[in-house]
Image 1 (tube, rainbow, N blue to C red):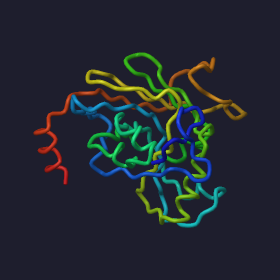
Image 2: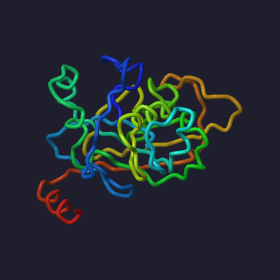
Image 3: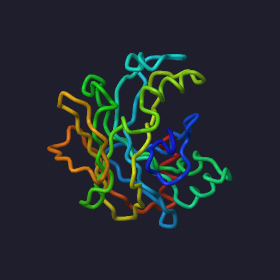
Image 4: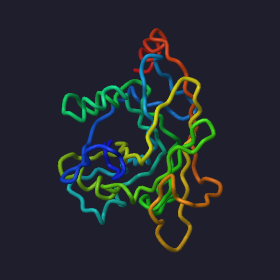
Length: 231
């Protein structure tokens, strides 16, 4: 994944090189399952467009990035709140903040052909019936083509690798009992989408792709049982 990749987030912004981090397999929650969190851990929601690599690649250019994408997915990059100030002061790592079990809910696979330009779509997050995030990948500091190109300069990307492309303004907290819905809208107009945020007066019709997750309490004995059965 990539951190601090949106200009309006109120913290230090990477200008020379993106801040990449890793998330373990245990963090993934497949669509149709609940997000389970311990009652004493506080998470922020971050809606993002995920990219699945389709072909092995290294040292690729920005203009060739689409050749190596296998498909897409909507995802929530949940971040533990209390560790964020420590990371900002270089006293921790983003992997610790974002690597909790069940902290990466992912939607169903979206065929590559269904999204001609991943930088030119609109993403919307609704929490308990209220819109809380609205953004477009092209407004990210490092867009998807740049992320894949930069990563491939030092890391060989393989089929099945997942990249979380970064979230938008207005991240906020989740709590047990919440209902979260992430929507993706394709741009069917002839021109690129203008800058999009919660203040944009934009009319959205029916979403083209949607994810839905309910937030439930996680008991530690259930976590141990599920992890033992999963791996």
